[in-house]
Length: 228
Image: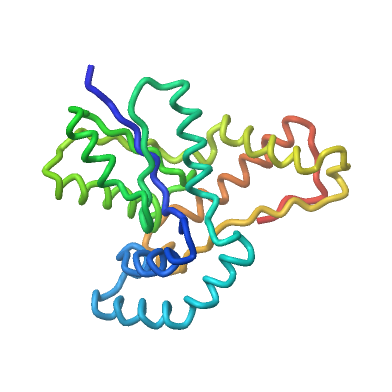
């Protein structure tokens, strides 16, 4: 049996206020985010960062205490997974540390032959999952490391995932009568040009919402309305 390791893929979150600029720079350098001529992308990136950096830093300090919760939550998840899985597990963030290279160097040294890539994005998009996968492939190539790579498929309508989401929603309602409330589900948007180019994200978001509606109906849980 091949020696395996698991990488949790995500865009990452700034660990400090000083990393906000790095996050923005790397995100708007990503061809899957700004799909345009590299020189034009660099120009647009400079404009965005110049215009938004101070505002984003201020919001980051005011609303998140100057530190993204994502790294800590990811580490908590890894500890839980280590209780169940007998393989090395590491985070692989796209735009701020921890980047994948350090983990890949360890995996190569330890003779890991197969990488399992687990996107922390339930829905597939070229701007998220594909970007992260391409990043892993490029970093493997730079290390002359050629493991077999397996990608976990989108799980936006997986029953266990839907049940978990529904459970967290119901915890928030406590003893309130759900029929008196609209349930508003929020998701990141994508430019229509990306959707029209075939990105499945919007369809999978809508499928995610549909699966939640079905779950609540089956459990006899009623809301005034469920909206996206």
